[in-house]
Image (cartoon, rainbow, N blue to C red; front, side, top):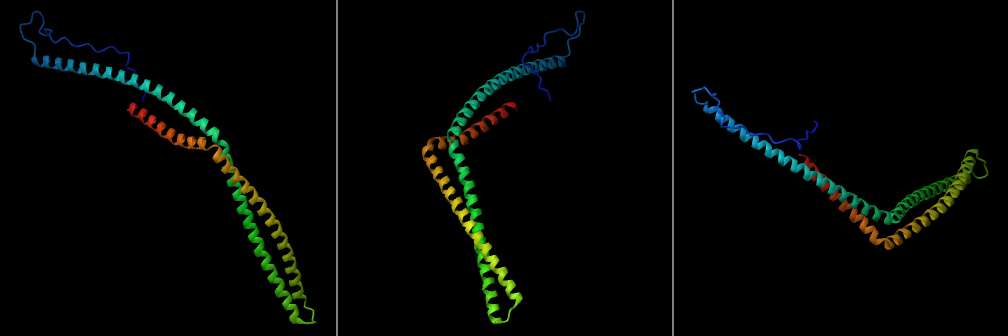
Length: 219
């Protein structure tokens, strides 16, 4: 619903209760009920005029509050932005450290899988060699195929183990480097980090309070 601006409306005029409603030639006295209704009308008029004045004052107060609050919010945003900008290298370093940790964990899983595959392949080689030994001098094509397959598995698993171990060492080094950088920046930017975190919480609270005040003024 569109708000009606009553700020420029003139006060309602009062009704003259001394009017002779019987007319100049009338000998009858005016009905007293009319006098009562006129008094009620004047009382209502006074009430309406007072409410309009109160409404105008409330609107002026709200506009002033809105202007002051907007300036305060802008100032808070500038201070918060400055602190965040100063502490940005620290938060960027934390993100990189988290990513490096994820890569390290991924490499560790790959290495553990390679170790398991290597152990299983060696067990297959052992079983195939044992089966061939039991055959003695008789050549067994099935056991020989199993031995060849198991040997290939061992070689592949060995290569995977070497590569995954190297990857794990590399990612671990990057992670430790990133963590060292985080700790260094944490000391270097200690005040900016603390202020950015504190200002963020304080600014959110103040902005919420200002918004709540505006809502109350609109009721």
